Image 1 (cartoon, rainbow, N blue to C red):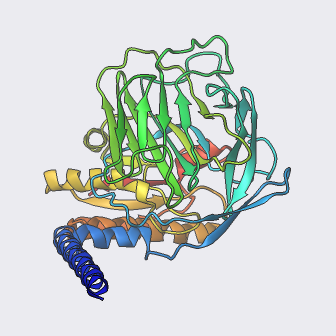
Image 2 (cartoon, rainbow, N blue to C red; image 1 turned 180 degrees about the horizontal axis):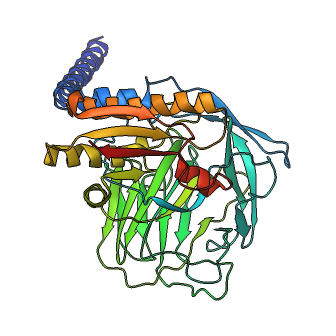
Image 3 (cartoon, rainbow, N blue to C red; image 1 turned 30 degrees about the vertical axis):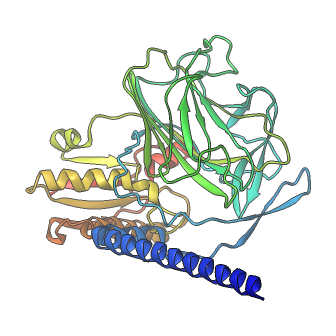
Length: 406
């Protein structure tokens, strides 16, 4: 009897101790959340405007016509991310653009050439994506289908962007090699490549590697799936590498001569969902403020929107943050924010869309502290193309925002 009472008392004590610790941890978390909320209140509101209200995880499906298979996954929201300090600004002269529009499910991607393996178009969660079904050797994969790929087609200053999917509980490793593996005249580089995992990035075989803060170590996430936005900026010899809103790598001196692009994954197979989408290669431009001084305006394709909408994508924050800093540093600088579209769709719809997008950018700048009396907005629709609308690159160049000095 006494033994039973003693055991019961010990059990109650452990339960009380455990409960007390849980209460203390929760109190600490609530305090931290309150402090962070007060500090970042302005940015949180801006972020909510960009990313939308958080949605509950929903089931999504990916299909492939050739296999006839349908796979389920959990869509994950990115609106817990903070892009407030994102400083990536893409190049403005677009060399290569593939947003997978008009692609046929199950066919080979029309904007690419194959090195080896099996790569196909697929539809995932209602979006067209490029599906690495099988690649074999990690340096194989796909290369951009350009007019001049037998020679160096990367300028001294360039940027690369794409989105990569990392499936819950699965190992995925995406590679970008800075030579064209299809064209034998381009020299293979010893360390000229980047590796991307769900929470980290690495340069070369033994080079710099860094992990996202507050993430678990390892090459897979056992809790949820992710779309990661990958961005790379190269300036003659210096490279910056971004995973979502975070600059992970800043490499000051690369001696390799980068000549082309090859995208691949590590031993892809049909059991893994390894997708990429929204690939862009662009030539770097002179600093935007210099363009204001010389041309009275600067033009950017770095502010991106959802298709046929005025919702600003999160990866646009690098350019928007740049403009905010420029206007803060130059209080006499005022802008007319002017939106332009490509020729897809009707004239009237494009005019309205361009006006809405220009207004959305203006409002975002105001939310970040720029006085509204320093900004106006207008839209030009498709009436002022920079180039012909007969290629994906041309259309992407025409979908732009101009900041005209007032």
